[in-house]
Length: 311
Image (cartoon, rainbow, N blue to C red; front, side, top):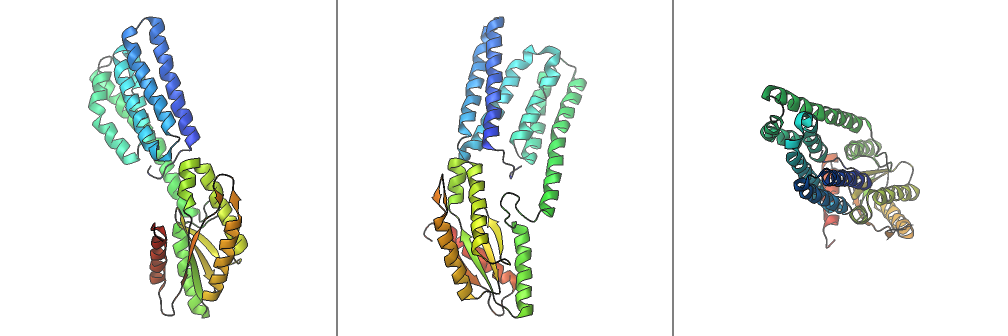
């Protein structure tokens, strides 16, 4: 899935296991005297080992996945003529790799487009009807667990109102909370302000130190905000590095006090990898006749301005 992200250490470990498997295959060919098949297996092992190293850089993880996928395809294609009747089992490797490494739609499309090639390889050892049945069954079996996973993810997303790692309100719930706060401010004739907070270190922490450091940064930021704000204030994550802090019954002066207190607390909080937490904070106050939709658009616009390099 596009939003699916495996921890880097598990991805590296999986690719490392693939490298060991291909190295074992290379050694087996050497011991059995299959000298013509040693070089392809060795080259594929080197490719997968390189992919394992690329996973240490987040922006290269997608490229490493493609390298592993292509290497898996080539390994099966090279070894298929020598697998005899066991080829029907090994034909499960391409659809499973495709499902694990690509988004669902792209995986299904690629499995369908490559079906003629795999069926041609299977037909070396099995009749066409049997080989076709085997391949279609393997594709369906590889898709079923992912379909269940996507269904569970949608269910959890619809029922979980808080980010389980940091306690920050999710984006969908944040919009609902904003509408409720605007309605309450109107009903009680109170002020409503919001702080738009940009954490530029989120991307750097994720790319240079991994997801664990990013999660630590978010949880630390959440704790600092909770200590620096009032009990009824709501912190939500609008984008991966842009947050809204809704300040009920707070005018511009109250929002300014919270902003200065929060900036000071963040500056005094240091993490081992990235040092002091840096933040850009802007105040946005609800106007007298402003609707919740218009107020939300102003918050979004303020967040986009913070993301600009010269802001």
